[in-house]
Image (tube, rainbow, N blue to C red; front, side):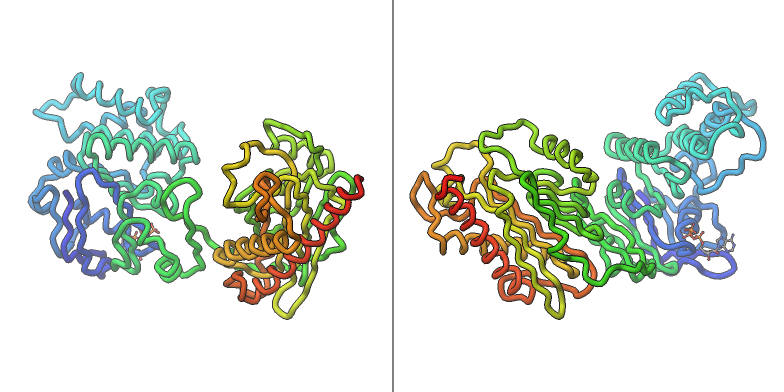
Length: 489
Ligand SMILES: Nc1ncnc2c1ncn2[C@@H]1O[C@H](COP(=O)(O)OP(=O)(O)OP(=O)(O)O)[C@@H](O)[C@H]1O
């Protein structure tokens, strides 16, 4: 569709150096790069408005140098970065200008077809209600949508967009990009768009061209172009890349580098608050958490932690909602709170605290083993979520990698299993050794400051601390639970 070969272009000197790439029909092609890297210059070269271009640019196999302005305009429309809006035209007149490449004859008049298409594209871009208004009376975002309508009125096969979401609020950014994607998927519209927002580019583009000082740094699918090394080198700042939470695309974010005064060690067992109703811990700063909690499971940053005691007969359709109400009752800030529940007496909580050269560790366990299960015989149990559980909190004052989170969770689980085995706790249904209970929850929470802890496996420095601490705390909490049962309390 668009074929660029050995392109050199610029102004008094070359800005673009030896660019070669092709854009396929129906593709959404994103152009990325820092300020001044040559993105706009590239778009101008492609639409034939930049003089002195060297190399070859062809549209549908035809060199653009052999196309008239009208021919080029029928093939591609441009939405520039800045628009000159110094004189007053109405929205409808502005959109109709997009029909210029189709005008024939000496006396230029808009046809019914021109009006029909203008109507259609104003509808698609949500500007119909402004049709009789002057452009000068519109906001930046509204004007941007009018100029998109003008470009679409050209009925082009190719749309060149210079920062199309500039001035648009979140909802219109999404609306515009959804529409462009839809047109490219359904009608084969080819879109070449400059983006500053790496995440929007990642979500909507099939391929990305990353420019660095007028040269191709990377040209591939978003999964390959958006990697930390490329981005950090090109944008000269610390950029982190993660998996998008609900889409199979990379998700980027910048890491601020201002220094905040943070307390040195922020974990302390003295801050654990235990009452008959709940165990409560408030950290002195937000912790990065990974958990199977009832309230706010998964990854997130939290600073309040509650483990709420419920009755053995507790049944509830909305346990997270229940915990929210309880947390609110105790004055917790819901959005900052991770919540678990248990039928075990929370006053039997057991803690382990240790400090070493690299990091500090606080482990907090409540254990009820009424629902003990042998993992191999889960199918022998009825599927019912009844409270009776081992809840394990592992707080670490250190900087954990994602691998360390997963490995710490494994280490904590293995330690719990070992504790149950050593105590001879059996699955009451099968009589075989229990490996946990049916509703156990575990939390790994890191301060993400101080020593880097790359690993959390059993023989890593972190794992060597987590394993024995969880083992000891689980044994102690379970022993207290069993004693209470024996004593019939
Ligand atoms: N008309 C011009 N005359 C001379 N130099 C120019 C002209 N337009 C742009 N430049 C220079 O060319 C370089 C690339 O500019 P260009 O606008 O292509 O960058 P860009 O990647 O689109 O930047 P931004 O992200 O800031 O929009 C810059 O150094 C700029 O100063």
